[in-house]
Amino acid sequence: MTPKSGKPQNRSKPRTRLLPEERRAQLLVCAVAAFAEHGVARATHSHVAERAGVSVSAVHSYFRTREDLVAAVLGVVENYLLAASAESLEGKKTVYEALMTLARRFANAAIEQPDLIKVWLDWSTGVRADVWPHYMEVLDQLHAMAQKVLARGKREGVISEKLNVKAAARLYNGGGHTVALMQFAGAGRRELDIFIDQLVRCVMGVGLDAPVTGPKAPTSAG
Image (cartoon, rainbow, N blue to C red; front, side):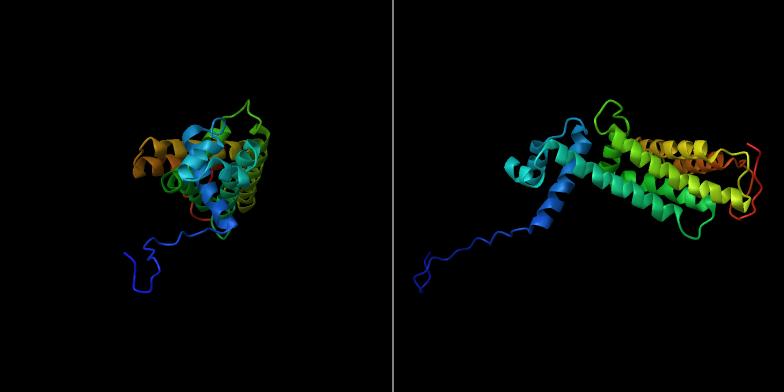
């Protein structure tokens, strides 16, 4: 139907164009989801394009090569891991509270951000992949953060002087994987809370019956 003005009436809504930084952010969200589904070693530009509803060439315009795409996705995971660890472990918390906070955060992230956590778990198993050295660098940073908290516990007298903080930090970060896997497997809240509490106590060398809320809580010799 033509209005009296003689001009054809256009009933379609104008297409919204995203700014380049907005489009890149959208594609990156789709890329994380694609990597979670297909794996770090197999996800492609085509998988991202299909999820975003754009052409493959559009994805290439933001991530020229597969190496660029992989680096961008793993950068998102790296930033999350380091930020979550820093925010959880730092501040005016007891050592026990700090370690519990981060472990619970990983458990919640498996529900709230499952794609990101799945990429993290997949990345951590890619021993033969080109991205493995980068993961080890990230892991070293995570170990260093946990060691810093455990060393503080020694200074405050809540952790035995006999505890090797480097070994304890590795045990703690490894437990983060288990927490995420338990969440994906459908573990209940109580089961997760029990595991996290015993993980943290084990890492601190604190017995199951020992109080852990104060700065001078008794510790075991382990």
